[in-house]
Image 1 (cartoon, rainbow, N blue to C red):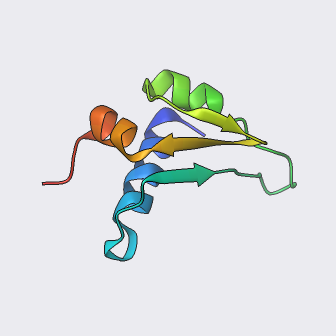
Image 2 (cartoon, rainbow, N blue to C red; image 1 turned 180 degrees about the horizontal axis):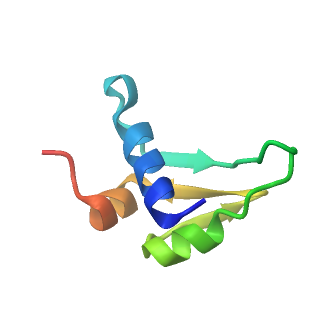
Length: 71
């Protein structure tokens, strides 16, 4: 996953169904079922996160700070 793809995913999740989540947790696998390392994309994006199992957790304020707050 690229930093741009992760950023787009976080923005889409933040705005899904008019919800206002406090935290978004993401884990991903590829077509073969192998875990996708999201930490490299998050590091390159420059977003604050915590590792949760095989995925990451990103707080709403980290999304806003890095990718822009919702109007």
